[in-house]
Length: 417
Image (cartoon, rainbow, N blue to C red; front, side, top):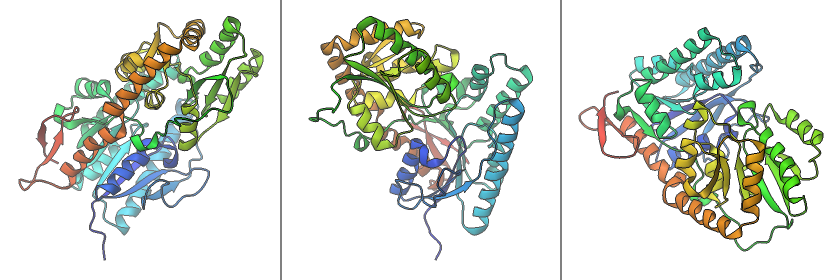
């Protein structure tokens, strides 16, 4: 007997789904709300059939032999991803009913899938994770105008073909309205962040290492500026010695080999510890033992608009944050963070040194951050908007329309599929 539950297929290609906490939470939410979910994604180290953390979300993975380093190799990588995704999706459609597709960027090439779904009269949701044009400008140094125009075209086509757009914060929503020409009722804000149940906080436990921990958790790519963390450790050692603190860098990415070399060259191997990629429970344990967390992203038009997933993870555990004063970072952390102007290693070192010596300030920041998480930022709040979107798309009203809420979860407006 065919499964009567509406079936949503989620596409994510920038990393394996088992490493994407947002996709895992979305699939958990869909299952809990009475939907069936499947994921198409690149194959990780293990060939998984079911997404970890879910009851029955199937993974349809594909090999990713290409890794972009320049414009042409990125183009080949994106083309292969589109071909692989389309093949897996068409195979799924031949075997079972597919009621809707949600595509997570980057890259912004899945508007092609959107055209197919809209032609079939089924919803296509664009889950807008990254600003591909700004990301290219950031990584390229001297961007090629033709490439930039193409990326902006693909971004507009993604917005245009979508039945609904999921934005990760208000800046992304404002961009979809302004640059994408989306009507307000088409764009829903669903922020990143852990659920309340994922945050254990480790209250009442004593850390094995008495030194205070300054922690970075996240991806380690060139645009993440994690080298500033290592250089800040060097400056901090000059300010207060190395007896009472250590820097812990948790994560992985293309800049990791260079970062390890930098730590050795600067003579801070004894106070900078690299853990590699950590699973969710390991991240929780590390942050529960942290005194301060660092967000080293440089000021730029792109970083101003991003809500860094690591910052929400920090705030969730009540870890005081030291960060550059960026629009969405301040919207997230508010007074739970100490802000620096440019993100130089000297600025970070001085701010960290001051906080390490000021327990009452850290306690106040911790309380503020934790309260913001409990009251507003936790996935428990965001999931309501996410499921409300799918209910309105796949469980239509008698009039034949689906209601899509405004980005802030306010009064709904009607949007035809």
